[in-house]
Length: 407
Image (cartoon, rainbow, N blue to C red; front, side):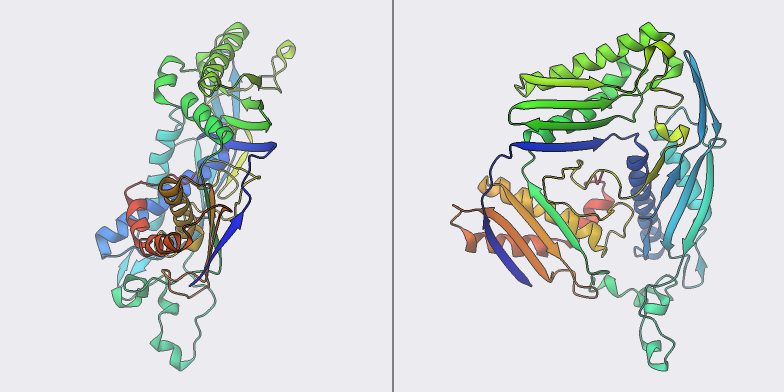
């Protein structure tokens, strides 16, 4: 393990962008569905076969249908197409896994919870693009019979699952993390979480979940553009539509005031045209109903925001195997380490964990931690980093307990 602790000038940037895609945004839905399928599959195989079998659903996609909306009513005209892409173990020893049946059932449960106005039997169309082929590495040379690569997705028994005793990195890849959140990041997360909370929606049934926020800060001046969908069934006319947006605006300004933000520009639904009634009015509360698409990895990073001014990776973490998939495990670990460093020393920091394919998971190839220039406890910090890396196997248990939210 190569550990590099570097000094860096951390300062409050003059300008900062932060974006968050709400829980009903198509990309967030794709992330959440992929993660839900991985979680349920992991628990299913652990219960039935004693181990989490190899799988990855991190290529799941959602293709939008079409809808009819008018004040007071809305419904889907064409179904949402669910692309169940990825690789998955379809058998264990002589036991076949009813994978299509399971994935269909779990997906319907997911959509009932996320978009309750959907008829899951009529408004979803399933497309299966699943493979059980191993990554390059297996051969049909006589000596390769001693290996397990050809049985990666069809294990003959637990003895074919080497990761049970010594998890190895599946890829040469990178996980990144940082702490703490900036004020703008905290503001964006708070706004979306509040608007999409059960408490707020109990009083505002009209509010859809596909809330998207783009925020910008220039010194102490804050600018936010937010898209807020309304569910047509609960909106009887244009005046109600306008009044609903005023309620949302009031809540957003209340949150901003709690952060002592004084210079604040807020724009809501900038595409609306009241004269011709082109509005963000929806049947189910998400643009996935009307042609939009969602793909894993295009949404929020593991810490819940898209912050181009901060370190980030292009990895799509959701749906990846929770034992050895670097794009998931190291991404969570990097954020855990960064947060623990901040809690311990109250210093801003950045963490990078890089792996090599086939390398022992608890022995990263490269570890980089950036700290402020005036930090004097580097040796102590190094011991903490090593200790945290040894805890990586606990991340799998945390994932199964829904301890981490990855989108």
